[in-house]
Image (cartoon, rainbow, N blue to C red; front, side, top):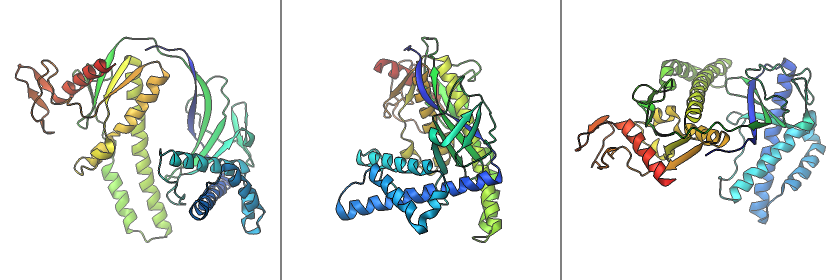
Length: 379
């Protein structure tokens, strides 16, 4: 499946280090964005409950102008108006998804639990010679350019955020031309697992071992002792104290370390898979249902199969590859990939089995071969 070069919108995320003044201004902006979102959500909910009508974005925008004129809400004039308008647009999109039955009803943003972020459009930032300056903020942001932007790219939207670990990030949305990879004609079946993160229908040099497996790095387990120690320390601190805030930050940093390493590993794995093969076949796993198994929930969450599939989906679309998803009920583990005999049962502890035809199978590699065959048959 080859294609032509395509223009895609792609976000590049970088860490930056604000000055104390910039940090203060951004924290105020985050608070105002959250306040406007919650107040607009409250007004929309009231109008729908009492009058049975839907409030449009234009009405919410006019209400924002009126709020700014109120003496008790004059603090909204102290930050850039663009992130406040973008908050109303995000709320409009949330309601559109709700009424289209693509999402649940919008909820209020929490100061402690919600993501602290603000979105700036072109009218609210200056991009000059690779330096970014936000509205009402000087000097330009001190960004750590961990990778270059595409040649000649100009950001259309800038999103500034602060995570639970206290790290500041800026995300630049740009338009980029992505060229498809040279067609290879190869196909591979992928069986997601826990013992091995994935097993492939055939080995790929420099990616898998000789059996075609990629070891599960188990990032959460590697840092489990450190995380448990930080969480015990947090539990001992008095609520509302400065020491509790410090302990909470240590827990958040440990979680951030785990998630960053996991995401980095998945990016490298999926990029290698897409570069090496033309067609990738995977199972339609129901992760939400699988994590209800309390014995395996922690390991399944750590493997992050959903994120693996998401990365494969957009990378195959970008680079002219094909992603085939087979039915979740396909008995890939119990089916002999040589003769097609279906075994009666296959408990999870059985990692290797022998078919009546004499073929000896590794459970995961056999499943990957069956997934590949089923995917190619469905094309």
